[in-house]
Image 1 (spheres, rainbow, N blue to C red):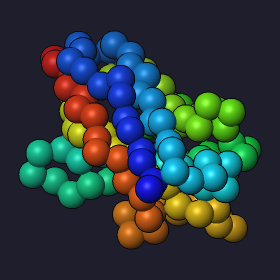
Image 2 (image 1 turned 135 degrees about the vertical axis):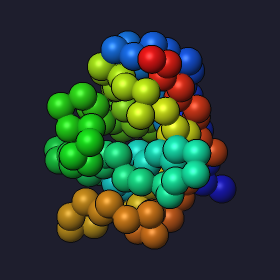
Image 3 (image 1 turned 90 degrees about the vertical axis):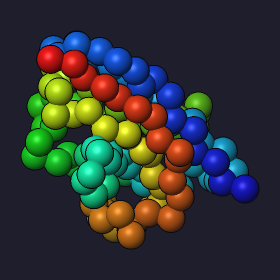
Image 4 (image 1 turned 90 degrees about the horizontal axis):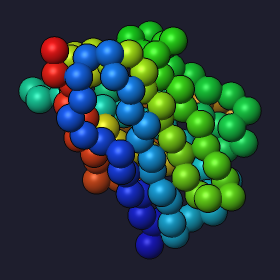
Length: 125
């Protein structure tokens, strides 16, 4: 079955960096667009970033543009989220998600078929 396993979360201070990883199995990884979402306490899950199956195109939420970078390594079946200059408001559970490749990147939760269990990122001020 399809599994997405996130790692790399933790407790950091404002201004620090973290790199999240999401290892995929049970699917032909290079046929899937991938994305990161996050959910803060009491809030809905929101889109963060997405990357096409080839890695050739990316898209970011305005709130993270210029601070976060999504990338992938199809040889390792892994997608990454490099997060720089972290702010306390970025505290959330971060989830990776997969959808079969489309003509354009998707940003809606319902557009993604597979989800990981999430990794907690806590940014202290």
